[in-house]
Structures are given as C-alpha cells and as structure tokens.
Image 1: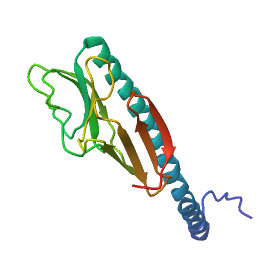
Image 2: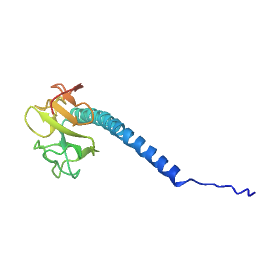
Image 3: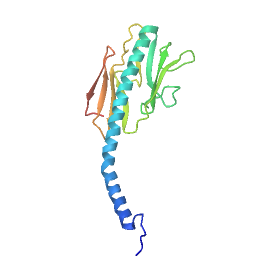
Length: 172
C-alpha cells in the first residue's frame, strides 16, 4: 500500500471553479458600474460646488471678473468640453478668454467615464462669470447637467445670487 499524497486540482474542479467565478463576475459587474457612476456623480457635484465658491470669493476679494470655463488642454477655454475638465481664471479685460496678463486660479480634471457634464446658462455662453463688484454671476445663472445611463440624472442649479442647489431632472 502506498502513502502518496496528491496535492492539486483535477481538470473538472478547475472548470467548475472558473464557471462559478465567471457567473459571479457577470452578476456583480452591473452593480459595480452603478456604484462607480454614483461615486462619480458625488465627486463632480462636490467639485463644482467648491469651484463655484472659489470663483465667487476670488471675484469679490480681488475685484476682478472670474470665469469658470470648460477646457481640453487646461491652458485655454474650449466651447463645450466639460467632460475633460474646467479651469478658473481672473478675467481682467472681460473677454472670457485667458490672455497674457491673466492667470489661472484653479484647474479641475473631471475625466468623466459614466456620464456627461454640460452647462446651460441664460446667455448661451459656455462659461460662468462672476462679477468683480459683488462676486455674483453675471447673466450666468443656469444649471450644470450630469446625464448618465447608469444613475438618475442630476442638475446643479446656480441662481442669481451664486447659491447652488442639487435636484433630480428628467431632461438631458
């Protein structure tokens, strides 16, 4: 009689284990994407709210217009590219573009994967401007829309006083 100990798996045991693992991954993956989309939504809401406060306080304290605009290269403003990121800058000549004598206060890389971010303001301008005298948005009241196929759509409303609120929305 031999006392040989067999350590290992049979081919059948390996196939069954891989099949169970594949089924579990297929069940868990949609929930994982939903969780990641919810985290992205929370992150972008917090980021926008804090960036709007930064812009408002800089406009008021430095007595200069401050602009938040979408950007692709984090050096110049772009038309509509909030999914990549945005920047905040002092706009001394009030043309809503970064010039040589103006400096960037803050940049934020959004890098959205699960949704799209869009700004819809009252003047149909793709940026938000805070006034030099009062620190209030100049004709820039409107909403940031976060639209996703995974989580419910939200909008961050910016009112005439520069105060924000978050709400669910069906439009995107």
